[in-house]
Image 1 (cartoon, helix red, strand yellow):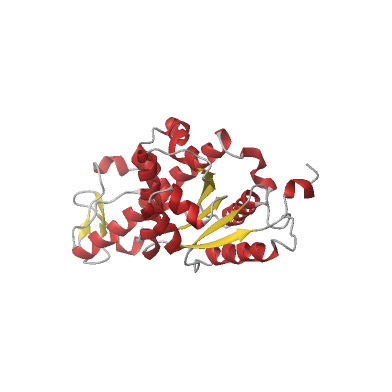
Image 2: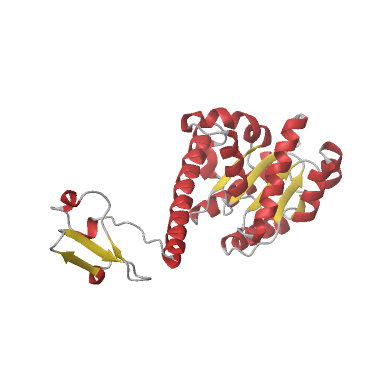
Amino acid sequence: MDLENMKYNSKDKIFHNKCKFCGKDLKPIGLDYLYANMPLTSIEYERCDCKKSKAYWNEIDLKEEIQKKRKHFEQMIRQFYIQNYISNRIQDYQLENFIITENNEKEVKIAKDFTQKCINKNQKNGLIITGKSETGKTHLATAILNKLTEKDMLVLMGRLILLLDVIKDTFKDFSSKEKDIIELYSKVDMLIIDDLGTESLNSMKLSELFTILNTRILNLNHKPTKTIISTNLNINDIFNNYEERIGSRIAGYYDIYCFFGDDLRFKRGI
């Protein structure tokens, strides 16, 4: 509140604040007796209807709405991790404890570079990590998640069928509608789809997957949202197993790297 622009009118006993754009006197919202014992800085004033003031308040309202939505998304993601996916194990996966072999050294470096570019907001494409089972794809994707969340970025990770189906029940405590879920998937800073190809999708689920991927691609001009997909499938398998429009989006907007690493279960002594 600009105290220099505030004055007391003894005639009508109401504090006035001037619009900082056009100088119009603004009256407090409500009856004047409500403000008798309130400090001047706590009084809420009407908004001026001049053009510059409207533009100013529209920007303020938009920022507040974005912050409110972000807090809601944070609650949804936290609840999702607690009730479903990797929950307590999520913190165990770090880039620093990933087992590097001569077969995956290049891919690990790529993942680290990708992570840093996402933090710097200059990573252009999404990332596909493909390769056979137990070569560390999920570990690497989760390690990227942990690095980004350390930078206060919103990251959602899960298997596709979970993201498209079970997640709706997960968020029932928040009274979320399907459009809210799609918005979360579309606007979260990083979406990680784990083990693509292990699910069976009907036409409706395929349509939802396309909507999510396509919306995130369209967001690239406005917000640096990125997507990581880990899968056992190669790009030809993706075209064969999914709709062509999904394959074309992935082929056109993702960097694809294949892991030829050792089975890390044996490296860990499992």
